[in-house]
Amino acid sequence: MLGAPVRSRRDNGGRRNGHPLIFWGILLQRFVFSVIYEGITAMTPATLRELIDRYYQASARDLHGLDLQGMDLASVHLADADLRRTNLTKANLHQADLTHIDGYQITLAHADLRGASLAHAVLREADLRKAHCHRATLVNADLRNSCLERTDFSHANLEGANLTQADLAHANLYWANLRYTNLTGAKLTKANLTGAKFCQTIMPDGSIRDSECIFV
Image 1: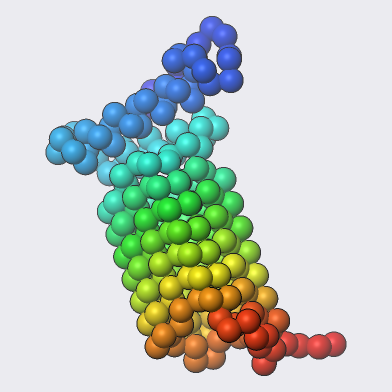
Image 2: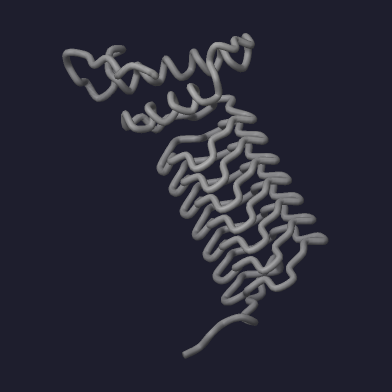
């Protein structure tokens, strides 16, 4: 088990090296570097997972730029985290809480996001190629200019999401909720839209599709 973070005598908003946020930040960076780049086997995936959890619990949400590809982070709680340019290729994020994350230019290619919550997430210019987003929640997510080629969004909730200029070529949107979604300029070449729900949806050509609106 990992020990408790060492606190500094004075809290200067995380600016002192002894502050828990800085402590966990440095520790996390060092361990990730060791595991991924130096091949050190002493740090098990479970221990690294605990480190990330404690880092988050210490109110440090800055994980940007880390290489976490292939990590098992199933059901992890990272709401509001800074994941800009973080590499999570092939990571297991099954049922993870990623609500409100800043994932600008994040890499989630081939990641397992089944049942994950990405509501209100910033995912501009993100790479989600071939990601598994079955039944994922992406309500009001910002996916502008993202690469979503061959991504599985079957039964996913994309209500209110901004997909302007996104590449959805060959994406699976089977029974996806696309109500109030903005698809302006999006690429839907050979995308599977079978059963998809539309209401006030802005289509790639700027037209509005209302086929699934329910008026009371």
